[in-house]
Every structure is written in C-alpha cells, then in structure tokens.
Length: 433
Image (tube, rainbow, N blue to C red; front, side, top):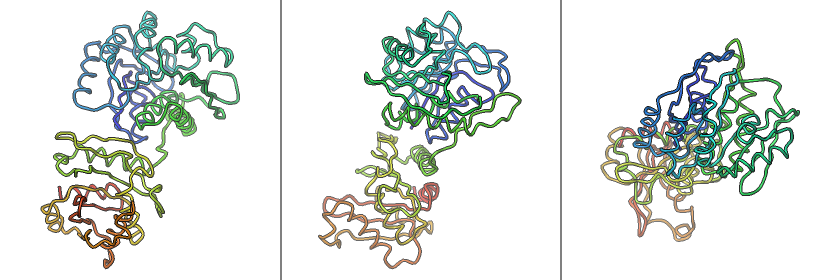
C-alpha cells in the first residue's frame, strides 16, 4: 500500500509528517509526504511555525502523483487559506479516500491553523473527506457546538457530516471519564468504541490514530473496522510512549504483525525491481509468508488479489490477508510439512533460461511433471499444487530453492522460488532475474 500524508513538519518526530511516516512504516505501508509548513517545537515547548509556499505544496503533490499510485491520503496541518485552496484544487477530482485530521493547535501550545483559514477549511476541505477525525475541541471549533455530553458530540458529528464529510470520528480524549470513547458516524449510524484511559499525557497519539486509520482503509478494510483498529493502535502507542526529552513522552507505534511487516516490505521491493514485469505469468504473481507451524492456508499471509503486470510495471491488486492466497500458500504448506524452516514463496513465469541461470548460480532446483498427476487429485481444488510439491521434494534431503513444472492441458508452466523468509526469497530471485 502507498499512503500519502500532507501535513506540517515536526522536528521532534512525535507528530506531523515524521510521525505519520513512522506509523505508515510500522503498519507495513509505503509512506510519502507533502510538507505544508515547518514548525520549531520539542517535547516541552512550541517555538515557531512558517508555511511552505502554495506553489511548492502544489509542486510536491504533482511530483508524487506523477510517479506513484497512492491508495489513501491523510491531510493534517494545512496552516493557511492559500495552502488549503491549493490542496483542494489538486485533490478535488481524485477518487482516492482522504482522511482529514483537523490540526488547529499542537499539544505543546502552538497555533497551527491561522484564524482566517477556518472558514476555508470547512468549505474546501471537509467535503473532500472520506473520514474526518476531530477531537472534541476541534469539533467544537468546526461546528460552534459546545460539547459536554455524547448527545452534544452526536449533534456535532451530524453537523460536520452535513458539511460534506462522508464519515465522522470525534475522538473523546477530552471527555472527563475513566474511559476514552471515540464516536463514529458512518452510513447513517453511530458507533462508540471505548478503551480504559491511560493516566499519562503524550505527544503524537492523535496523529497515530489518523495515520493508522489511513493505512487500514488502504488495506481495504471498512471505515468501521479501520476505526476500531486505529483506536487500539493509538492506545498501544500511548502505552509505549517514551519520555526522551524534558517534556511530554513521545508516543511510539510498534508493528502488530511482524509477518505482515516483512511481507509488505518484500512486495514493495519486488515491484520496484528493474524489469521484473517480464517475469509475471499470465495468471499473475502472488507472494506469501506463513506463520510458524502452519496448518492451513488461513495461517499463510498473501494477497487477496495478485501482483499484476501493467505495461512495463507491476501493480499491487488487493490487500494482504491470511488465507488470501490458495495456490502459492498450498505450495508453502506442502513444503513446510517436510522442511519446516521454509515459510515463504513467490511464483514467476516459466522460462528455461531462468532455470538454467538458477542452476548456474548453484541454487537447488527440482521439477515435477503435471501430466503424471492422478485424476483423484487433478480435479480437486488445492490438491494439485500440494501433489506437485510433494512429488518434487520426495527424494530430497534438503529443501530446494526453486521448483518448476512445464504445465499441462490448460495449465500454465510455472516457477516457484522458496525461502525461509520473504527477504530470503528476494535474495534468491535476485540471482535469477
């Protein structure tokens, strides 16, 4: 997933574009940024802020979109009305989901939106929002409604929705309660999610919430599920906050799934390999990574869609999900039953030159003949791949790096590259492509 943040710079890296990029990376997304303003702040104090010119903001946005496919956009600090107008002009025809995180003041006391820009924010940016995520003071400022109860918050959410935001999340950290509750309005319904309040103040938790929300939407999850996950991630980051300066602790995001993190990074590396599109077969490519001691495809992480050749490049179609792949996942399952250290694999287009190169590079190569498969497995979904891998490794004492077959009636020839990890797979792949 490719995720873009349009926001101010925070030199403490607790919030702003630096904080967003940290969260995107921790959640296995590729992060990009457009800087709208520079701030001078640390964990104790806010010193100064200056806007970027609207021309450089426009140029940054165009630079990103001319080169990269973006799956979701987060808009944070926008500073003044000229930057707001520029962002609206560049994004108003985009179909990419936008998470709008109102940033009016910093936790260290700085003013991050000029007073004369609020009306522009409401009129030009709120209608772009797939989801907007104000806290209670921000929701009060946007709507003019004093929020002392959840009924007040619901009225404010409805008013913001009427301004054009498709979905509204009002984060409830400012409510005086032993729990922190976030209110979501989506598809004409209200939902409330609560976590036990953590008795400490930190810097960056709100940015982590909206950044995590952005990544989960990019993964194809619903707004409802994305908000639930983002709240958990945000609270975990506050729980993990570290006091590294003289002031507020800095919230820290830890990746909740190391398997997803490794595979997502490997996929990003794969699609950026020069000329790799030539190795994508007609049935397209999948790249998988299994849990330890996996028992079924539900223990194997893969793309629900595929890595698809689009001209002279590759696009990631679909999101990572356990059980998202059947064929390559079944190949890994069959391999790991015999060689448990093998947990990752990718399929590429068959070519005899590739096989010869693998042998020349001293990779261990094995083969199976699909025409020898019994009818009892040939017509059973998932059984063919398992049968083939078991046939290829039956007499081997160590796991092969590459297994291939030359196809059968209606079946495309294929090469599978195996490894202990996605990084291991890419290392072997790099030797033969």
